[in-house]
Image: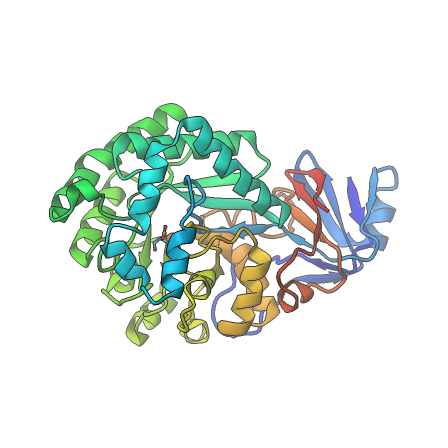
Length: 417
Ligand code: NIG
Ligand code: FE
C-alpha cells in the first residue's frame, strides 16, 4: 500500500530527542509512505514514490497530516470498577493521600480487581484499550499492581498478554506488585517487600518464560512514595528485579521527593515516572543518563493540583522526555494521548513539536522499542495515524475530542471515525 498526498508527513526520523534544542520532526511536505508486510518499505515525496511504485495499491491521504502512532509508555490499563465516589470526596477537600491512608485509593481498586472474574476483568480492560486505539494510541505499556498478591498479579499479567494477542492495540506489560502495600501487610511493610523480592518477582519471571517463551521479560515498576514504598524498599525491589534480568522503571516524586530519581539513575532504570518534585541535582544526573523522564500531566490535572513536571528544566539539563497518560482509576482516567499533548503544551511549556516527539519516538525509547516503533523510517513497523486535519499542531491546540481519522497498525488500515 502506498499512502500518498499527505499535507505533512511527520517522520520523527533520527532517533530519540534529548535536551533543549528545537525539535526537528523530520517533516516531508506532500510526503508518501510505502507499506509492505506490516513494515515501512519506503518514505519520500508523493511525486517520487508514485513514480517509483506505479503499480502499488494506493491510499490517498487527501491533504491530511500523517504521523507515527502514539505510544503511551505508562498506563495502569488493567483494573475493575471505578472510584467516582473518591473523586467526589476529593472535590470536597480530602486529599489523595488521606483517602489512601484510610484504606481507599489503590487498595479500593485492589478489592474490586481481586473480586472480578477473569472474563469481567478482560471485558472492562478491553473497552479502555479500544478507546485508546480509536484515539490514536497504537502501543501502550500497561502495569499490573491492583492484585498485590501473586495469583491476582499474574491474573492481571495474563489479561494483558491476552489483550496483546487479540490486538490491535499492542501491549508492553509491566509487573508492578509494589504499587501499594496490600491491607493484609499493613504495619509489616518490610515483610511485603521481602515477599515481592523473594517470591513474587522470581515466580513472575518463571510464569513469563512459560507463557511467552522467547519474549523479553516485562518491566518491573515500583511506587516510591510515602504510603507505598520508601527508598530502602524501592532499592531492594529494583535490585532484585535487576538481578533477575528484568528491565525496570520507578514512580518517583509524584507527591514528595524521597530520592527515588537519584536511585533510579544509579541503578540504571529505563525510566522514571511522574518526576514532579525532582530536585535540580537529580535533574542534572538525569540529563547525563540514559534514564527517560516520563511525565504524566493528566495526573496533576486529574487531582486538580498545580505542580507539573518541570519539563523545561529537565530538557535544559539534557534529559530525554516522554509523555504518557498514566491511565488509572484514581488520578487519571484518560484514554487519549491527544489530551496529554494539549496539557503538556500548556503546563509543561512544550512546543507542539516537542510534545509530539515525547509521545512517539521518545515514548518508544521509554519502553525500549525505539528500534522498531515511534518513527516513520524504512524497516520500522507500519504504525501510522491519518488525521482529519492538515496541521499536526491542531492535536495540541484543540482538546476534548479526537482528530484521528484512521489508524494503520502493522500495516492494516482501520478507520476510527
Ligand atoms: O501513577 N502513583 C501510583 N499509581 C497511579 C495511581 C493509581 C491509583 O490511584 O489507582 C499513578 O498516579
Ligand atoms: Fe502510574
